[in-house]
Image 1: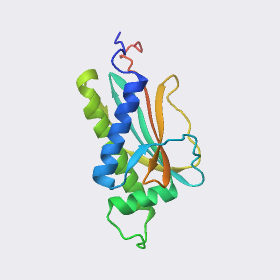
Image 2: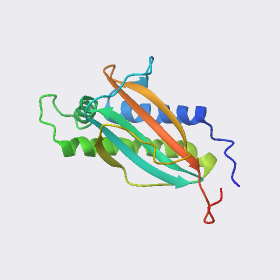
Image 3: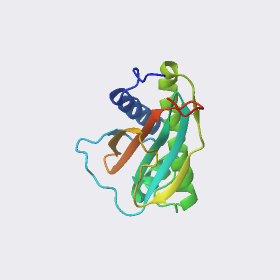
Length: 168
């Protein structure tokens, strides 16, 4: 049985924050930091970028943000003028790409300690409520502020991978 002694919620939360900051600073050109006051509710139409992974750990990384936040990310990442029309497919593509890049950064930070991770293709949906579909998975999550204006949330759901017999 593989023991999850190296990975714990505190280090995964740090890895997730460092990875998200790196992507937002270098690619989205927006500052991102851990929210000083958690508890901001993301209401209305929102976007959920999701990507799954498997290996010694299996799980899902998600990015959840409001429509105005997703639009701001799209404008910055695509170097658009704020008055340009933003199409829904541009928003979905951008949130998917950001999700993929954050997962790539997480993967590069943890694979030396836990081994290789296989990563799926990111998917993006418009949502109103989040639900955990991983059963007994552990979760690290954090609320962030993007560009001082937009609350968003990152989550990393994970569990020990089961071998072919169903045992850990």
